Amino acid sequence: MKSQDIASRWLDFFAQKDHAPVPSASLVSPDPSLLFTIAGMVPFIPYFLGQETPPYQRAASVQKCIRTADIEEVGKTVRHGTFFQMCGNFSFGDYFKEQAIPFAWELLTTPQEQGGYGLDPERLWVTVYEEDDEAARIWREDVGVPAERIQRLGKADNYWNTGQPGPGGPCSEIFYDRGPAYGQDGGPAVDDTRYMEIWNLVFMQYQLSEVRTKEDFDVAGELANKNIDTGLGLERLAMVLQGVENMYETDQVRPVLDRAAALAGKEYTSTEDPADPHYADDVRLRMVADHVRSALMLITDGVVPGNEGGGYVLRRLIRRAVRAMRLMGVTDPVLPELLPVSRDAMQGTYPEVGRDFDRISRVAYNEEKAFLRTIAAGTARMDSAVTAAKSAAQSPGATAAGISGADAFELHDTYGFPIDLTLEMAQEAGVAVDEAGFRELMTEQRTRARQDAKSKKSGHVDSSAYRELQAGGDTVFTGYTEHTTASRI
Ligand code: ATP
Ligand code: MG
Ligand code: MG
Ligand code: MG
Image 1 (cartoon, rainbow, N blue to C red):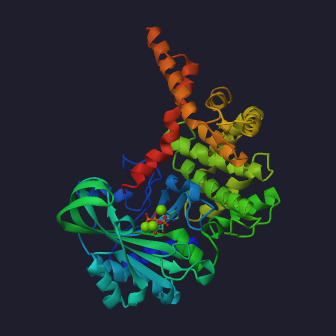
Image 2: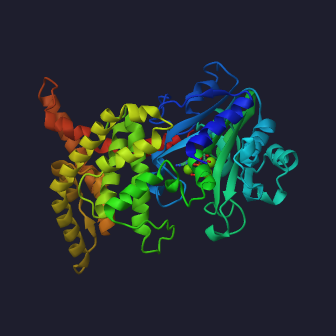
């Protein structure tokens, strides 16, 4: 089943259950506390928090999402993309667990000829929050899942809250057993690689009066209006239904992977085994396919490359894709080859990608060109820093082996290498970086720039200092900021 069919089947199923179909919101989060839309529920936050009255009591959507917090997993696990689509069904004070659970089971296991996804029920496992006897009972008695495939987990895995006083509640998750070739027996509580999470059902049931950490909070009582928020990863289901090894091999992503492999003259082997000689290149190809698509979708939604916020995330995705291709020997621009392939894979679902492709591609190609110039200028300097670090490590009595803070600062200041590029390249070369030393120098420079600005009475900062501020240390924390916020939702 194609990704597009998975999406339409989702909306059709829930329409039959009286859910209003709601189009995907932008990847740029409608909620000001988040950089990007990281889950299907994000556009509905005001309804869940009781700040606005929803125009419907039941809704369903297939929401475009970006999770930069998962960027390091991409290509290494089978199931994490920076861009993905989350299918969701939502109840605003309407139905609760006793319907949400059977809906999920019905859709997953009804044969495809009858409108479902036709998964083999024997391959499905579920987890519930350890104290949620009600959910366990519904799975066991109403749905008929055997007790040995229902596992109870604690707050870390199966409890949702926003990190602040407000709604919270237990979750129940559905996992697909990929089979004994992929890991150990024993269910998702034992092995979440073999047993892949596909669907999270969140039961917003309680009012939390105080939230100290995700796992340490006080419950004030039951919510008057209980809500349902669910999220199923479209790519994860596509991977199962298309019989492929990972989400990068599904129909909307694979064509880019293949084109990248052809460009690099590499044979893609689907390996998940880090000991396999093909592993490094396979990971790179998966990453390229993911990042190119994410960049395409972000630019479509109006993000432009920059040094801050969402623009910085986009820049980083493009740079990582370009660098992965270089590490496989491709030094010519790659986006003119890859982006049109991603467009062709995505425009069936998102026609705006095709309509607006002139603009989108111009933004992407210019960013790649600028990056190639940066690399050309800084690579020799980087190499000499690496060589110096390596020989220092070998000299007798060496204490600190790594690229000095001063070198990292020079790479940044003179060559335009953002610190994370230096960190990544150093890691590939097997040397450390004195990041703390780098940050100290950045802070000093910023202080100087501020003093200069003050002493110039007019308050005018000359443009070079301004550029430095723009490219400054604050921006590299973007990922963490989003991560912190992401874990709230
Ligand atoms: P995981 O534990 O695998 O990282 P999660 O618990 O972080 O997933 P949720 O926040 O529960 O995921 O999101 C709901 C669903 O969205 C998941 O069950 C999964 O199917 C899908 N999903 C989450 N993150 C990603 C991702 N980075 N790429 C693809 N699908 C994802
Ligand atoms: Mg996750
Ligand atoms: Mg999870
Ligand atoms: Mg989850």
